[in-house]
Image (cartoon, rainbow, N blue to C red; front, side, top):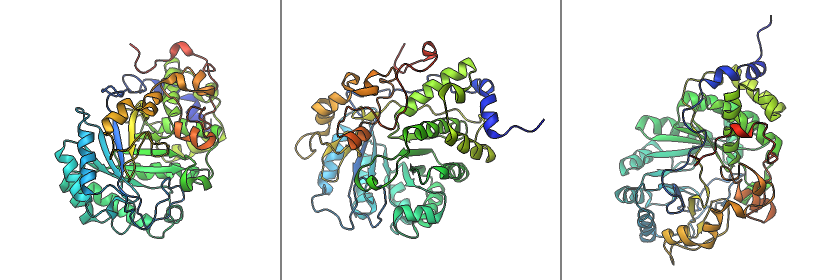
Length: 416
């Protein structure tokens, strides 16, 4: 009898893997009341960046904007984040390239003094050196997130618009791990790069990372010129990422329906059902699974699966622009106020936009009719970018409400 291919194994071992599923619920909810305090705040410290990334939501520029928050205003923002109380929100300094600000180390130190868990998301530029990373670590930074958008130097440098970015990023990855910084790797998926996912996953496993964040493109900024996955391809990719959870800590960005996939897959695993047939997965899933299986990245069940967190735009998440405007997401360019005029705490808790985003009854289309709407809710940023309507259905989702064959097996987050 011939040895089964990885594709065949993925169809025949669901009963075996059911015994390895993560304890607890397949979707986590934050411990804090996300109506009162966000789980995470991201601050765009600057839009200055020497790169020309094809997907850049900020359409970054070479020079700093004179209207950026200055050092004192940035310190005031840190104090505002600390005002949310405990547990303090995660605070991420991003850009542009944060290293374009000469006060970056000072601000990391001040944020740490305020009791904030501070992370930095630098660009792969010549400023990303071991001494610079060491200085961030000494100032109190807990982690850095680095972008890797292709499995080869040519592919990544082409995506970032500047040669040499791959080499700088890979060296920074090694240096950060060596210095004791936690590392998150971020990868943007497009139709052109989707087949790089298995090799990227292998690199994440080999080099070591706290988390691999896979970002599904939102067509905003320069990203409007890229080819997004269609809804069927997205479904295949999200199921592959679920499979990878056996060997890599993986999360998604702007793919809230990954939470729906996790709920479905856990329910099917409890029944011992074939997820490929039950969910109608397609050719892309087969191709990616075969590649992952050949690398020994699936079927291992050698780690506890990381359940996704129920956090989304305005609902546990806030983004502050370089000028102080407060958005529900960096990919949703609708402002609810400015920290120069009103405190972040008041904007987050009481603004019309943020409170509305925490109401699932506002959702329209398939998202509004979906039984998974409280767990998922769809990407409001993508809905807005594609349709101009924040409440529209997420066009990257192919799920039809009430089509899951075993609704009584589902366990929704927040239920008791």
